Image (cartoon, rainbow over all chains, first blue to last red; front, side, top):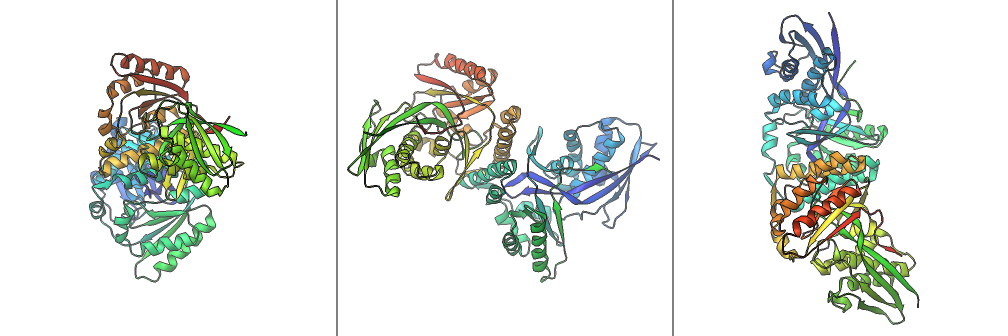
Amino acid sequence: MHEIRVLAPATVANVVCGFDCLGFALDGPFDEMVIRKLDEPGVRIKHRDDFGLPAAPEKNVAGVAASAILKAAQTDFGIELEITKNIKPGSGIGSSAASACGAVVAVNQLLGDRFSKRELVEFAMEGEALASGARHADNLAPCIFGGFTLVRSTDPLDIIRLDFPPLWTTVLHPQIEIKTSEARKMLPKDVSLSNAVRQWANLGSLVAGLAKGDYNLIARSLEDGIVEPVRKSLIPKFDEVKAASLEAGALGGGISGSGPSIFMLSNDAATAEKVAAEMRNLYSRTDIEFNTYVSKIALDGTRAT
Amino acid sequence: MHEIRVLAPATVANVVCGFDCLGFALDGPFDEMVIRKLDEPGVRIKHRDDFGLPAAPEKNVAGVAASAILKAAQTDFGIELEITKNIKPGSGIGSSAASACGAVVAVNQLLGDRFSKRELVEFAMEGEALASGARHADNLAPCIFGGFTLVRSTDPLDIIRLDFPPLWTTVLHPQIEIKTSEARKMLPKDVSLSNAVRQWANLGSLVAGLAKGDYNLIARSLEDGIVEPVRKSLIPKFDEVKAASLEAGALGGGISGSGPSIFMLSNDAATAEKVAAEMRNLYSRTDIEFNTYVSKIALDGTRAT
């Protein structure tokens, strides 16, 4: 039987001053999906991991996303998706986005690459809506396109792939649970115009710094005066981790998604490894289980292998 | 006697989604300044126009800015500044910025180009503070550096010169008076987080569009959901002018500074002229006196000639 294997990367969204619009793709960890064509219509899901996610396709992010693209393609066949999740649900590095993107890219491969990347994000948004209750694309966009992406608008969907220089990220995933609803409740409904101006001046500068490959400008622009101050209390030792990372040479960073992961950006692999060592050093003195990841910002998003 | 002649261009600040940080320089109109060295210390001002601006240096924007740079240079001589303003005060295209920048660039020339452009903006900010009561740099930065500039921060002063493709602007200056204090009072103190996100996603996209030379992306990003909706009521026929300009092929635009001028951006000179014709057509049916300007976005700011 014809089968296709797809890798869907972890992603970081809410990149510092780019809350709700800026994200980037990692070069691992990846969720793996194997897709097989079935004669009968519908979506069947097999899990090859221990996360206990639902197997019923309508209750599963990958299942909902796969159904959306199959429906649009008006196929008379069905699929089986065999999923090995390596990105832990709730980690804040785009676990549900990887599920949704892996599924739509796998189906699209089976369909002979029929849909555009933008359309794939649209299908994946239906899966993401199941996970978060909202149609947002800030993890999906980098997960499909790779690199750094800016979601200018979700309705209509407008995704801009940013130019950027070589960059590495270090992610610390403390294995604590942050309820997305709780993190969302902490967000201010309103912000002062002066804080908003400072935030958009920083985002404009960050995009300029990425385009110019100006690491110093990138570092100066990685400042979030709106979301980080209220949400960082959810993450033990956030300030210490950030301070130690900057001390080790990181350009800057913040909360990945709505946490609990923390990410830092560096301009070379050696610095990113040093940052990881500092993170491990700090967290090994707590009783919280944790993982660290070091990855180059990946040019590619979800792909067949 | 040694004399130097300087041209200081009009500038547009508060560029749509870049309120309080994004500006650009025109290739005219210009204020002209002739500077002469005097043996005795101090600043003497001569006006060669009919605007009736104060001649006392401590009450004059150019005088205050000139005094600031002379003080920093610890000179034992003074200067005479002969000013021909062609940019009408209160027009919203950086009249006071041109006064301040013309003065500091003229003095700097006399000093043998001693100070950096960034330092010149710092001196000019003292003049701008006299005019507006606030230390802001969004007209000064493009007036000194030329091109498109982003003021990431004023304290410390951090100015980013953006990359941008060939662009033309059309400015309509209705000769009505808008008090800056009145325009400032209309600003919301707070904005909703969702509006702020939309604004910074647009600014990030605009900076990306400028860097990529993607006119379509620039056009899509020229959207202001925060300041234009409240301030446009101060400018007669704002909506009609904008609609007619877009119809004529403009990429987009909005209020220049805090008004009353309206500016539009186009990707070639012919479209910018068509936009000007539409503006003249609409305003000639009112009883408001007005000027229009068509200019390429200038790479150069204030310079000796």
